[in-house]
Length: 234
Image 1 (cartoon, helix red, strand yellow):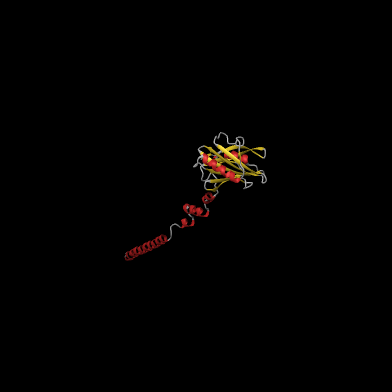
Image 2: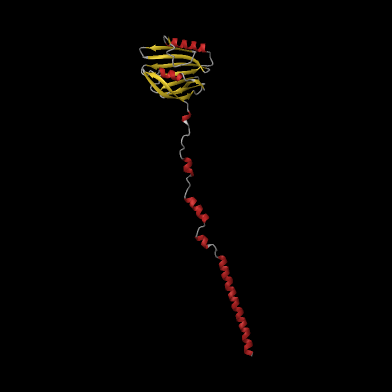
C-alpha cells in the first residue's frame, strides 16, 4: 500500500513534465513558423501583375513608331480650279491644263499654264516667267488705284521710250474676249528677233497693266495673252 502511494505521485510528476516538454516543443515550432516567410511559393512564382509589368518593360509599344511615321500630304490639289487653255505657238495649236495661281500681294488671280513661274518682282509688280528662258516673261501690275486713261497714257509713253510702237488690232487682242476697255502696243526688234508688248485693260473691277518680252525662238505671246485673259479679282 505504501509503495502504491509513492508511485502515483511519481507518475503524475512524470506526466506533467512530458506535457510541459510537448508544449515547449510546439511553442518553438510555432515561433519558427512565424519567423519563416509564408509567401515562399509566391516569391518563387511571379504574380500575374508582375508578369504583366515585366512583359510591358521588355516589349515596347509601337506608339512612338506610329507617331513618327511620315503622314501623307492631305492637301487636296483636286480642289484647285483648273481650265483648258488653247494657244498657238510657232504656228501650231496647243492645248494644256492651266491651274489657278494667286498674286502674293496684288488683288488678282489667274490661270497659269505649266512651264511658267509666277513670282513677285517687287511690291505691286509680278513676273510670269518662262521656265525655258528667263528673258521671256510677262510683267503684271494691278494699277486699279489709277484711272484707265491715266494708265493707258503711261503705257504709251513707256512704249515710245522702248522704240517705235505699233497699235495692236482687235484681232491681235482676240484672246481678251468680252473686254471693252483694252489697248495694246508692240515694238518689234527685227535684228534681235525679239519684241516688247504693252497692254492695258479693265476687267472685273481691276485695271491691269501688262508688259511682255518675247522672242521668235519660243513665241509664247499667245500663251501669255490667254493666261492674262483669265485674270480676275481674288
